[in-house]
Length: 115
Length: 111
Image (cartoon, rainbow over all chains, first blue to last red; front, side, top):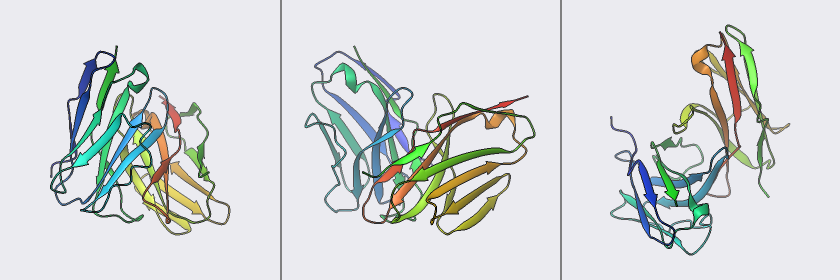
């Protein structure tokens, strides 16, 4: 079946602009995660959604970052007033449900470059 | 502070050899453990998950978990050049939603 999809695959923007990144999880997966991976670095957790529960936003680095998930499916990560340090690959992952036993499957990522 | 640590490498092994990748974690409450492979410029791909002490085998891959010593390892038998990638260890603590990732070990299999 179809995997996790993300769009756009690449985004180049100017400092100060807002960007929206989209994630479409695997059908039936209720848990959705956003991560950020900077060049040569590990994955940094950003935010987690599970069904209709309030999201876990504890990883968001600043109030310029926000995310929503509509209808328990597609999610959008928004970065306002982008800064050069926001340049990274933004990865989305989904799993069946919130449980530490459940395996996450990653999308191809969105490479964000802030000039 | 919950931490997952991996030797960044690079680790080089000849083709056909066994590659051994190690990961240690800081919290004894950890419940589940995952190994991901990440090719350059690509997203992480799940290789194996392990939840209980001992070994779990899947083809050429064996995951080993020792909760008492707080480490998890991945063995790759008969290493192939196509195994050359960065291997990420991920740990989930049973107290929260987050999966913590190590920074990865770079593996090169030399033909």
